[in-house]
Length: 329
Length: 256
Image (cartoon, rainbow over all chains, first blue to last red; front, side, top):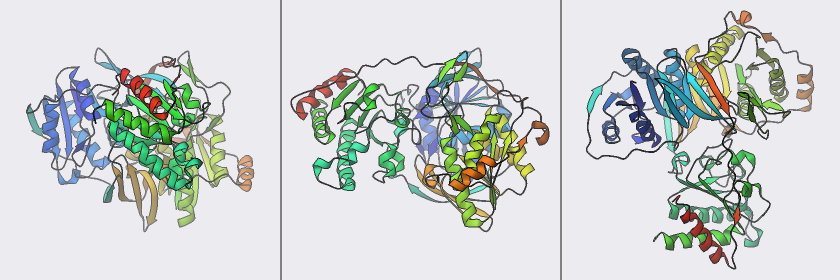
């Protein structure tokens, strides 16, 4: 099976799930990695080190910013010329558009947000969560190339082999785009929730604690500071429920759940999170779920493996201290 | 400005959805307008208020989806159109995009098509970009704010790594995220108007197309393996004792 893996990056910063996709691709045989952008030599080298046998690079000033039309046209032209059977991509906002458009050009389809992938003699059988993870759907694509986007953290990341190399080829960029990028402001949080192996999420309880004698905003500030300290000791990312995002206590980038991010970390700790279904659908596939809440009846305890009924403002700092000692930090 | 807002009807988020004989079933739980599409309607209405013009809600689905269109009308959309045909079986995202891209020119004079960023059913999130591709129109996706000036739309694109300002000439396809603003509640007058509305239904023949053959098909639909968790409540005399015990439990699970 002729397999391509698209390496998604933003300004040279590779989305880790790209390497997971490369690992999946390798399980089917030799893999060509695709790297599009401007000045992407380091990304191409990393692709070799994570296992690519060949790297196809389209390096052009017109590809400096992701613009779906130009990226899709570049991918379409390459695929039309070389006829791969399978194109794997990590699932991101960019790759969803890229694969969607290129699939239209090539009269084929995309299997999206896949968590399990089987090869039935060249035909991919892909499993993906649907109805907010309430059901699992298996889908197939009748045409080729089969585009498949893989959910972050659903597949293992291959080991990196420093200095590994392979065949590098240059491809022409298709530069016609219909949109212009006029400005960019970096996200306030540097950690991408979807790729985090530990997520500590704060809910209403973080801002609502009358015993501190502070107003809600000041309480939330202190609360998220405590949450952040635990996240930092565990090397994790800070998440939040919609309630505290809507209240303006933390930016939207942190929101987990139906209208935010779906996360699948190894460890999720919900603090002051009641566990509304809209939040649960965003974190229920975490390997281990822990909840700290004052209310013993909070629905989050129904999905948690371990729980503490108590005040997060007392329990969390103590937990941070305990981990500092045990992890030798 | 003539604005189309594309909406879909989905089972309510609170519904218990189960798989039975390869089909999704939600019992007697209500079907509602896709929650993200309410933001799309809100975004479209904001543009109408700023620019003048009209908002037309467009939906591809069974006849029951007229209820979702009525919600869009009650919020303030001027009219609604349902694309529906008994000849339509399972439609994949490519097929849906081709049908929408056939309906939009038939409406005529459209300058902006607004979508919600995703649907909460078995949707793929692909149809937005594919509709733009079939139409050959620019895609301004994940818009948290939209500004239209002199035939050009500028949006604030909210994505994983931050925010971009991106622009394109109209007509354009736009998808919105929740920072566009809380969807307005239907007004009393709006609800009355919606309840009386007769929603036109366009068939494949009306669009001058045949039923698209799906490329992506469902092979199976299953319930996820049940995760029987019993929550073990960690107790102790002091927060330090509780924290110590909890940290031990977490470390023993080898997830760190």
